[in-house]
Length: 296
DNA sequence: AAAAGGAACAACCGCAGTTTT
DNA sequence: TAAAACTGCGGTTGTTCCTTT
Image 1: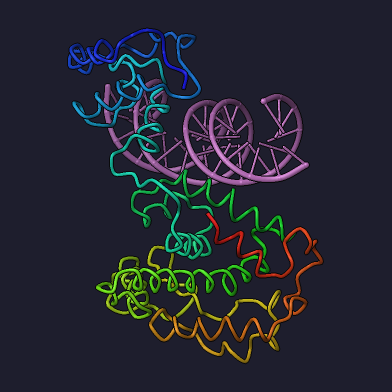
Image 2: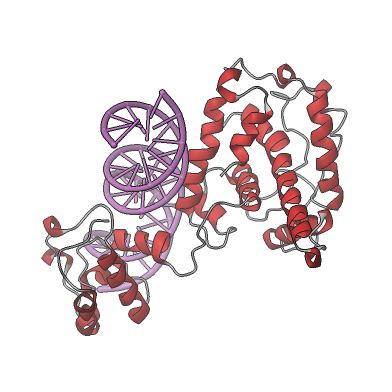
């Protein structure tokens, strides 16, 4: 990593001594020398300065914070660095299948409202979710040669990938239960329970909505509602298995199992009404697409 | 081992809404 | 009350890392 000059960390942290006065009489913006502002990747030293300053003084008032901390950065840059990278409550590592499922569900409801979606994934930032969507989800849309916003692609997500994610979560829970016999409660039921909790967190009212298209701010995880259009899935294809609205419950998880199996058997690739795409590039069968999806 | 290409992540930009002076 | 400053959001771009050839 590109480190700044030869300054020691301790000397850099000494900026603290003068910050209180700085807060009381911040340098007017007109006094700033914009040409002096740094851009590009943050250095370790800059991170330390910012973390140290925020630890002492708290966050907010980013422009004066940047000046008083002695950072040659814009307030916006400092804020972004803190929120997306330095915040102690950030969650690191791969997006879990549970989180993927939640992102798909919430995006189907709210679209590109990344910050709103991020509020429901503790420790994840809107930027992270946005990047995830662009790199993973849009990649699959591209591979399937359909628009990511098309009903066709949404239906594929809802009726193919999301049930598969549920299966994956359940499989993971089962395998971890086998690894630890004392954790035998981590079975299908507990996986279902996890989703119920998730649903409760998202929709704290006592009654879980059982309809689609609910108002914007109250959400529940409703994976198994019927398609809103037939653009992708024909009546003949899924009508036999999805006849009613479903809110999430244990029954739905079990339904998901049986449904995705029956869907697979009922729907040949052509039944999906997908445009012709290069199957060779996606592997030997359709499910290989999901392997890409599920892989980290 | 090196180059090329793609994926993933980090950071910036412009704009709109909100708060402060 | 109006202007200036600040904050937050979504889109886009740049950089780094990893994989493939």
